[in-house]
Image 1 (cartoon, helix red, strand yellow):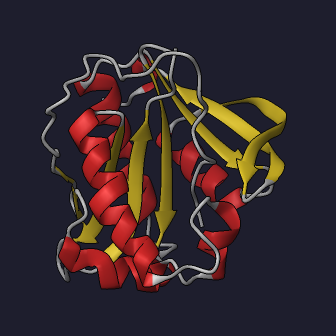
Image 2 (cartoon, one colour; image 1 turned 90 degrees about the horizontal axis):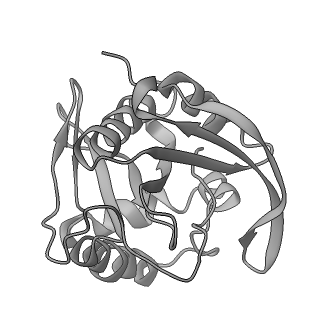
Length: 202
């Protein structure tokens, strides 16, 4: 299971080249379609987030209820795209249409040109390279299309699955941030790595 901890905060907000009316962007790869979540996806998101590993390594609510999936779609994702401050995709297998995970770009306040990438993977589709494929597409969009100067990956220490994905995407490990990320009232040590435009493969 993979996902970065919740984003950092500061005094100012907004992504680079922010567009308050930004329309959701669809990304495609060889095997996947990444698009903003819709109401019709709520049941699949709810089912995926029942997985204890997703709850262990991310900031999704635990226990996870259908109302949490509804909030994810209608509030977090919808308003994230509307404001340009938190871009959320669900990744679907092109052949079957099944939900294989979620990806997001979060723009920490007060740090222009920087975004944090986060993801989770549906249990049934792990181990097939889908998360690497999806994260690579999102990273390329952020760095090449949005013009970010730096993309950051963070994960709670011990999340080896996420670290393996980040390494395959090309992130460079930078260290450990002690007592850094909050999850349900507790602070965790977090790994941090970065990806710069020059790190993208051709």
